[in-house]
Length: 166
Image 1 (tube, rainbow, N blue to C red):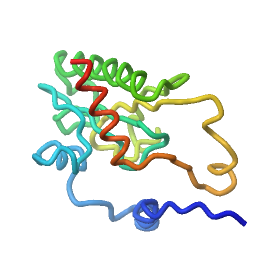
Image 2: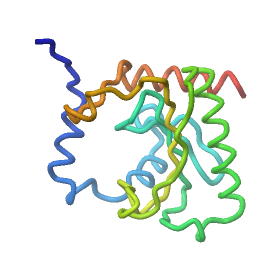
Image 3: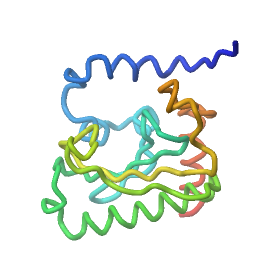
């Protein structure tokens, strides 16, 4: 029998066991107000929104764009914030294309817990790179996603690609 070692997943598994507790405060507000971008996986800070790597990615390179404003409603965002979220999403897709050469993307928001939002109180846009054959039996049978690259490697690769396009 082969074994797949992914010790970083234990934190995520533990969080799912106690999901109702969750972290204090809002992860997006906490990360954006902290100055340690690398530790918080922040790729870019804009005027009204920022880009960060998902701590529990669906695929390597899974990015999110979130406004600084703590809100669950698009109606609460200014036109400037809405535009910046779209522009940062475009830049994120271009950056992922350069860094990973995916075959496609899932881009979107889950607004509300019933729609699948893991963090329903602070809206955020997901940009998930996809490849032909990136889904296999592991998520279906084993409820485990295999990620071939560490978060640290993904962060450096994406940050370098992001900065090389500016």
